[in-house]
Length: 180
Image (cartoon, rainbow, N blue to C red; front, side, top):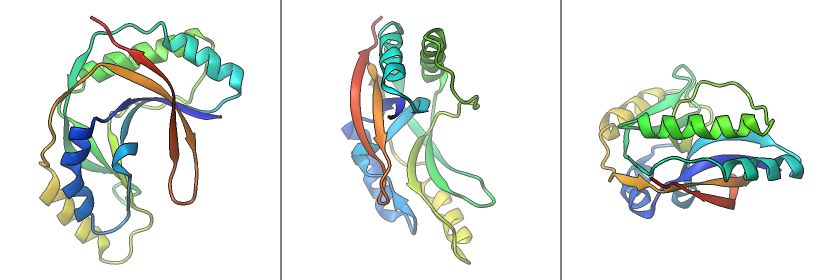
């Protein structure tokens, strides 16, 4: 089972992103209800490891915190593959992510070591055709300061991801509340 741990993006933020997603000149936008901020990607895991992850995540404690999307970027600037929205303030999400990783490691789950770059993937860009790099640069400049309401992160979830040619299907397996 392919699984990850993430924060949901609320409806108000999804709605604010609709004009930006509609203006995307190329690529495949992520469905608004599939937008999320990944805290940990566990990848393919057998059911006993998914159950161990669930038990570990139930022990994570952290207070709720404010989050707001801000700024746009791409992965691999020379050959952009994905468009993402960054965060205006990363401290709360970084603290939560550290606690999630600590709990998962404590349960004996090993994951790829990657630098954590908090973001919300907005679109998959594929291979850019000639001239599209300039259009992408113009899009990034125009939408860099897109409007996004702040929201309070009150929980996070364990998700199953099923890959399909037209995009991944995400199914929530469990939700974990944050408490002060």
